[in-house]
Length: 66
Length: 66
DNA sequence: ATAAAATGTAAAGTTTGTTTGTCTTTTTGG
DNA sequence: CCAAAAAGACAAACAAACTTTACATTTTAT
Image (cartoon, rainbow over all chains, first blue to last red; front, side, top):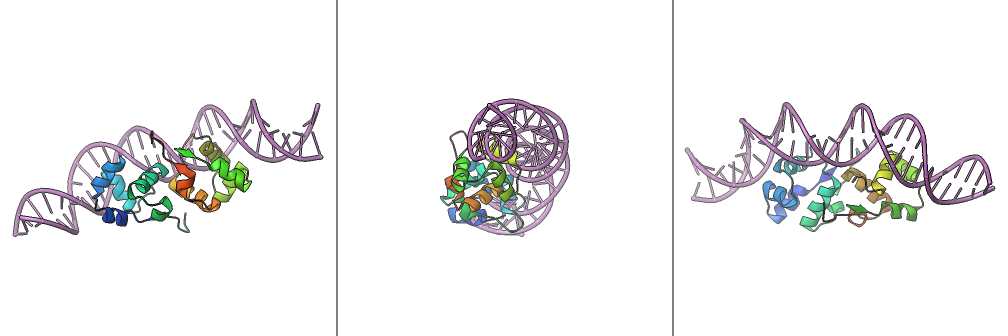
């Protein structure tokens, strides 16, 4: 699983803490997602999608290993 | 979280077991997702999206409680 | 150069997703 | 009507996501 949350966040000019607060998760969760440590739940993915006004499929992408 | 997996599956004319096998999960997982018992992971959502050729956002929808 | 803000990291613990197995109920087709 | 297929349900066990707390490192601005 790849994702471009970091890029979207940069475009929106938000800190990890900002984003975390807006979607109601911990800052570490955002950090871990951006670092590729784990894949967020679908609820989280949809919230991120909504906030950035981008389809989930544009933010998260399957890899061969998934 | 609402989803229309059951409808998409009907359109594709697949059984729960068929769908489960195609995306590599157990039949119970599909059943539970359709029954709204829990929300699948983002990896699963993307696999379902890919199989049905529909955006994740068209298959899964946030509710006020999410 | 320094302080403050932002980011990275990690362990421990809770919650949620997933599997496996088994059984019951409903639907479908002959 | 009857058998087979499909769907629904439930519980135990395990895996993954997520939280919290706490501290270290890097970046930014003065």
